[in-house]
Length: 218
Image 1: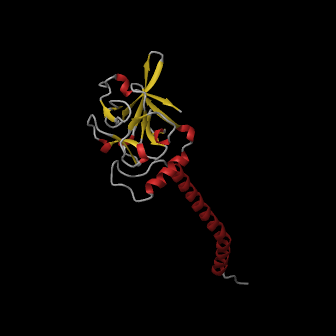
Image 2: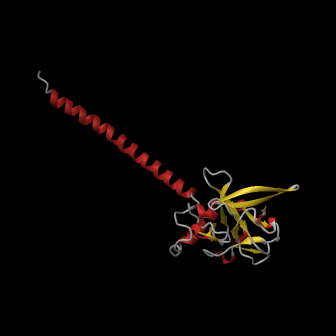
Image 3: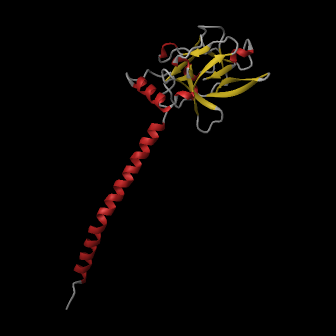
């Protein structure tokens, strides 16, 4: 009996395709699900947003949404007050508003005085300082290197204007913290007691020297 080999090959190919197609579809679906899960996990892990420092204000609602994400991803135990050694006052973000200048105030448990240190990947001892009340980050306005430039809070982003190097300073048996701006090389400073606004200044030019030293507390 003559066998149509061409037809036989086609029949077998069709049967093989019919058997493999569901497996291929399943594999593709599984790959898509894994990719989607990875994207969601990455998004949930982010505490920064892509926006320029001191740029135009974000669209209505976006700042509040960002604040909610930051506080949701950061446990309450990670937030600390920063008390100035020279003046005994704490860093405060009054009103929790975008671009508000940071200042000293009587220390309290207010979330406007609570700050979390979010490590900057690949940069030793370097952090973004995030406010618990607003979800905004401490920055030097426009990232300028001018001594005396204001220190405010702005939407957290990947800009170096929001990166601070935390250095330990030993004074006798006590250890304090000093915050050097990663971009300008100047340090977080203040000039007086309650109500005094924060600025950046030469790290060796503080008067008194303890005006640039800070105590972290829970």
